[in-house]
Length: 214
Image (cartoon, rainbow, N blue to C red; front, side):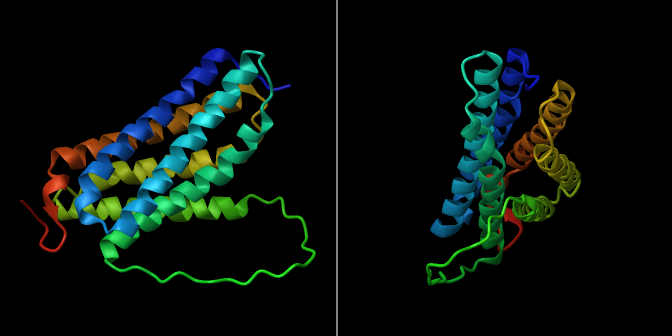
């Protein structure tokens, strides 16, 4: 039995909305600085993150309202969100490095494989993606000569990493859910604040080659 409430489920939508707004602001400001491939990666990652968070909140709402226990919505959250952060991070990295890597082709052979249920690979995806996003946005903060904004993104990074860890724990108790929600809201609120500050300080007009705004 999971100790969810309708109020808890509705609060879970708040960090999703905060991240979605921040992602839209960043996509608008970074669009003219990214190649099509880099922007596609960043946008796809952001969409993955928003969908994962919204579906997890929907899962809690359905459960708390007594509609059903839609377990696939719960099970898909961590893998989808982690991959989303990785894609978004790679998109940011591609924008800064101005280079694309060629696609790799892998052959698939039919063979019996062991069952793997660990989540550490998704923790790695999330940490790697968040790290790339944080480094990229900190770099842009420095280019705008607003280095103190880095602290906001670093704070958001640690909150999101903490949330990623908490997401892999047992969420059957209400206390654990409220702790995770508090950490998530703080992290996504900081991320949105950082995105708004970069926008205010002229990110849209920043020329990456010169460090000067138009």
